[in-house]
Length: 349
Image 1 (cartoon, rainbow, N blue to C red):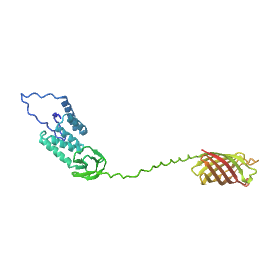
Image 2: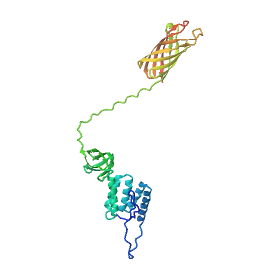
Image 3: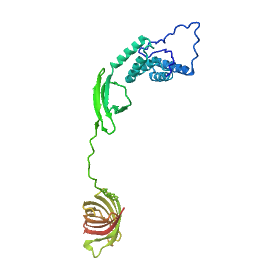
Image 4: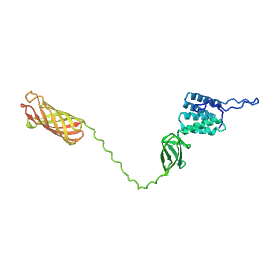
């Protein structure tokens, strides 16, 4: 890799003292003039100066991006020192440790001794704040997962913040090895994670073919409204009475109904309330009604009676029902007591 010298105006160590570039001896009169900078050198200088300005504004993330681009174009150990400083100030301790170590290795014989000493001091300060965990996995090609994140060829030891961490070794065809460690700042720990062979699969007889259970039919749609027609008579005067009737019924809930019937020949209206007692397709219910007569035979007298009784309903289908009801109606002394009885059919919707 080509090395292009970059004059470092600022080295990122708190409190960020200036790092002077290595001085070259004064050129002799006979020495040739330095060659002009290449476009790559000028581009690296531009990124480096931008990083210095951003660092002064405490924009460490932006400064880091500029220093990394400058190092890609023109690698120099002092740029690694700046990159390490940015990571340190952003509390990226693992990245900071890695770049400090690279700087100390690449800077020997290139960077001034006092700068190397400063980097070592800053590195030691970080190592006192974190824990170093060396993990060995078996087999060696097993993947290492730390807190749910798979690490690709991690450098050892791992730099981890204090607290609890879950370490997992994973290898295809083998059982995972897991361990949870609780570490404090300054700890140095060694962990071995050995995956194990999976137990052989049991040999079992061929599974019997089990047919899927038949789908249950959907429950019938609830029907709440009915119209009906029938025939009614007074059982006490069955030979002299009888007339057709029309009615409507509305279901309220599963046991309560409101009904309204009109007896055509007798000129009577019968609002009623039914409460189902027992049964479903064949049910028994109690009925309370208030018959209102518009005329009384040859008389135009109108009267209201109170009635109570029982009824039977047979429902051969959800939409069709037959109803038989009989109740005692109590009017005043002049009109006496009657036993209205009705038989008819209903269509439910």
